Length: 128
Image (cartoon, rainbow, N blue to C red; front, side):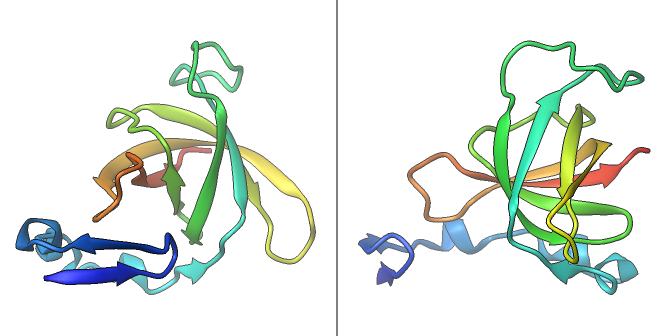
């Protein structure tokens, strides 16, 4: 099936492979109730698990927050971090134009469907 992607302005082909997201992971989980859409740049750095200091090489940069809750956030990133990796993220505050640094653990990653840019949705759980 041919489809048009308005965000990129590109025509593409959609196969059922891209539509097979694991919907069962969302069933009977009340975690989605307190999520709020928030699309803002989020700076991040790789860290060691129990340290707030930046200590790992590479993959420091900026992602785009998709939504945020009291327990974590969904971030759009241009690389795929490993599960349980800890990042220091500067969480945007919706009211003020400020950011709060905190540690967040990678819970899950999903490739963005129909993207040729190797983008990933990354689910992060706040650690501190």
